[in-house]
Length: 220
Image (tube, rainbow, N blue to C red; front, side):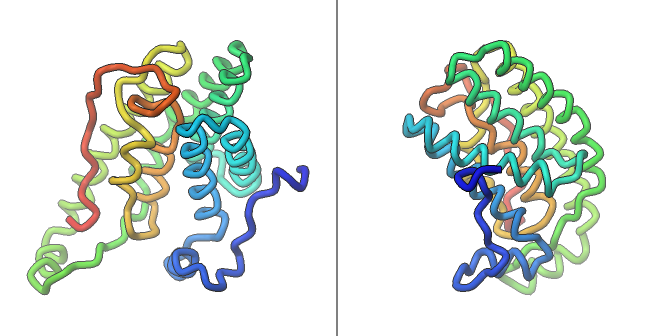
């Protein structure tokens, strides 16, 4: 790994409030590092900064390669964004091959959804706290069903990207609104599902009419 491609080091949280919260919730520094690098890469892609996107997404690759389990859906996201870099560089055959590998990894996301840890959300009233306590099983079951729908949309998006066809749903554009405030497996899943570059509405991506699933509101 070259110095320019090393992942950012945030194991010492210092004045980083978000990192301190993530570590306190049980995340590792590399979990938030990867998320931030994927966000940075997507933002650069939207701005037409191919070099910036490449730097961020290649750094994220090292985190995924050495820190994430083989079954982690974020590995598929990492591959997909490397494929987009290949496409931007004119290496279409390599891009298609990487997208297909990403799709095969994403096929295993159902197991992650079934076993993921869903943290309780902050509530604004005693009423909502009591409702959550009474109906927590229903909430988690509904969350898993909704995320299964998300997973199906991402699978279709990867298929479109592999065939260099327009993607029908927004990806990164939705992340800004769907990003959970808690640090649990739902955030890992949504980052994997939505931090894929090339979705509908993203500058530089092929356009198609949107058709989207709504994630469960974070405060629900």
